[in-house]
Image (tube, rainbow, N blue to C red; front, side, top):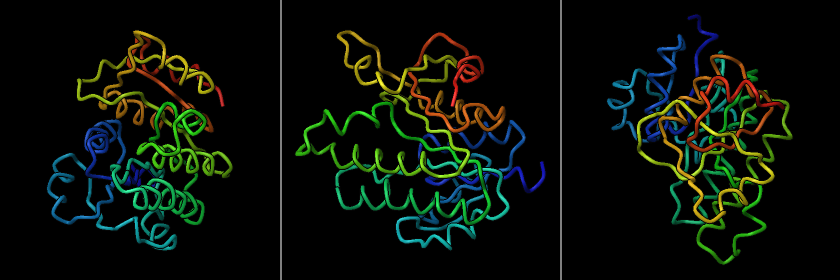
Length: 232
């Protein structure tokens, strides 16, 4: 494909990014994966992506915009990994927001955010003293910044991530009730990381779920069909 079909993945050495890269390549895109550690370049290249070393935690908006220039889409699959509230805010919120602003600056309208299924509701239900709260708040704030932007965004909210192979079938949840559904006794909340990678690829391949939030779990509906039913 042409340069305009380049997809830039932030958090390029993460499990979801490494699964998504070869799927995007198979769908006809070229992929550039942004990583902080140059030692990860070989893994990224093996997945079919071109590695680009840039620390998004410290990178200015203009530096990100330079990296995004000419791309078809940006995928935010980065994360601080928890444990340090300050770094969680710096990566999951502040770097994410800068990447959105950079996409606008670079003229890249398509943006896919990997979030989590309860990001809209957890800040109202999770104890602020909980170690999970900084992450919930950071993702909530970043997602809301994205919704308020002019970008053609898709926010993906998987459930509890697993290493199971992709079933290529999901169940889409209503964002307003996702927390309640997932908290129900006996509820299965698993979402295969490879299914997340499949959803990323399908949203970009088909142009589906634009300006929409897609909260989902492993389920019974083929991904293409499930995404086609999502409205903005």
